[in-house]
Length: 351
Image 1 (cartoon, rainbow, N blue to C red):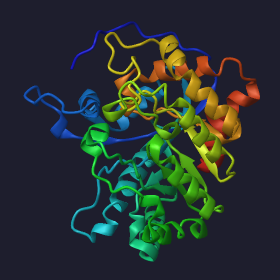
Image 2 (image 1 turned 135 degrees about the vertical axis):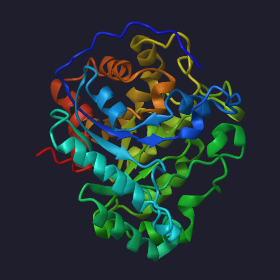
Image 3 (image 1 turned 60 degrees about the horizontal axis):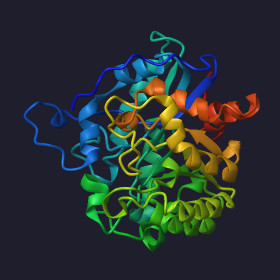
């Protein structure tokens, strides 16, 4: 698809340091080409907007005006190993991203640290055997900080589209929890992606493992498409109660972002022309303010979720929207939201 080009927005607060705690890298040749059939789900349309997002594209975004000093890479199934035990294939992603991080750390691309921390993937349903795979990730990169094992699932396949098919109840599964128990002894964190109706499963998991740092991605993914079309606002109170229940658990932090994805179905998604930061801030404000009020600034991290959030806006517009949402915060609070919480939780080394 093509979208109307609009002039780039002026950068708000250009001297505010940012650690972007959530982005991906990928190369998906199958998503390129004019002869592709129409996308079957909005998420496919987003992938076609950015079928290639590697270091060059990330660096262009990092240096597009905001003071993004470092990033945290989030697993997305990229560059898995071939010809090895399937359990160890995800280690290839950490090896790949560590190479990108080394390129950035060389200094020849400027004073930025792309992928300064890495979150990979391990199938925790391996049970205790997951420990060997976790240790292989740690050996592959000194920047490895933890894993994400997504649980996003819904009875309506139209909600997740190409990502549908996961069985429900993953985080309550005994084998999964046996694997999950390997994280804390190794000092590793756990990122989670699941949908608003599933948040009770995460509350139960976090209570069972109070010593494991858990990071909720994308404010718990409120829904407004598929079976939930037209219901997002009506479900807001239910979402808020679950967010408050998670925030009561000190081992849980919250990434504030991901609202530009297809799943909440805000008017800004794939709008033409793309929505300005004022509109994004207006649409996202109830969710952002609820999370910050519940978790506090020291457990909230503004995230780009790029290139997925390209479905609503470009990188500089997204960070402008977050800065508008934080306009009433103190300098100390802004430092936590944009930089400090990410640095602490992911142990980002900027030396």
